[in-house]
Length: 136
Length: 274
Image (cartoon, rainbow over all chains, first blue to last red; front, top):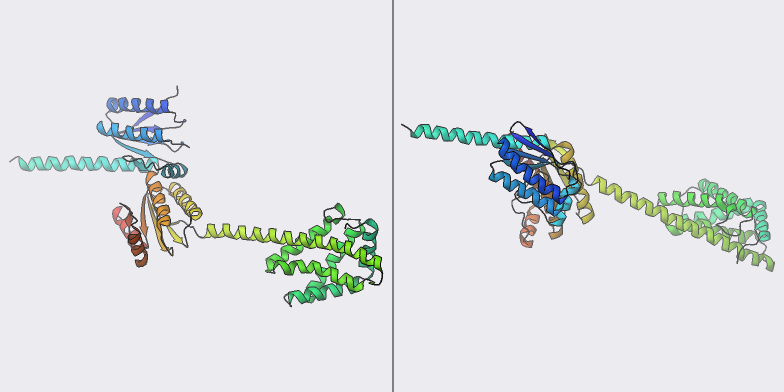
């Protein structure tokens, strides 16, 4: 069975789906990704679906599940590069993929994740300041 | 009654011998029906050409318009209807240009001879075919023109413009039916991908009325853009439209709506921190 490769790019895991997304492939990706997030301790996942002509309801649901799983593992998921035709079909089918964050392309997706990371960092920094203020 | 080879030959000879009288009478009748919208010289040239075409077809022994000797004539008739259709003449006015040949032939024909009259009926059948052919091609050409114009209209009315780095806008003008909504949606989504713009503004200032169907189309476009990772804002909502939207109970949910395009652009720029 074909597998979707998962690449580590700094703090981000990049998944570029270049093959037909059969149900088994989707499930395998879900498993692999969960393991990789834990193993690499990454905080961001980018799933590039720009090569996908068809996104059916199962793949849509799997993407949503992957997003939920990564959130549990403290990683933010962004789905990037959805084609116009795919988006139109999903809307016509009434699937709006709730809980999935999207970006137009990999670059914008990276920016989105970087912005989140910096917010986290600021939060942590401000918390540290709060604690420092509390101490005396 | 089909045109026999002998009759065809006789008429070919008649068309050749009495050509000046014929073309004169023919042009008179056509000029009458067109009421001076084409110059006489122009008409004379056209009827003269057509006379040559009819003569060639009949001399070649064409009993029906569909036959090979009449190929040239058919091309001429198509040419005629094409130019008339483009100049805005009606179908009747175009067909009369061919029908008038029958009258013209009658004026030069010796009516006292009964066999002549019988031939004339056959000949008139041939002219009828020619006129019907003209009519058909006229309609075809007009339909082609209309289809072209509809397509041009569709293209013209759905531009996607880039307002700022990362901000595109679609100024919608005219009634939004399903076909146009589809074109707008595809055009917008494709532009989003091409330009990598994460923000889109749909401006409905030019939409005369918003009913539930139009709202549905706009909502679908916004949801599709969101799925792709772009944010849509609806702007240009006129007071009456706002009232209709509320009266119809249309919910735009968490989609940002602004009164004017300027407000929408300001909103986007503020959001992106520029």
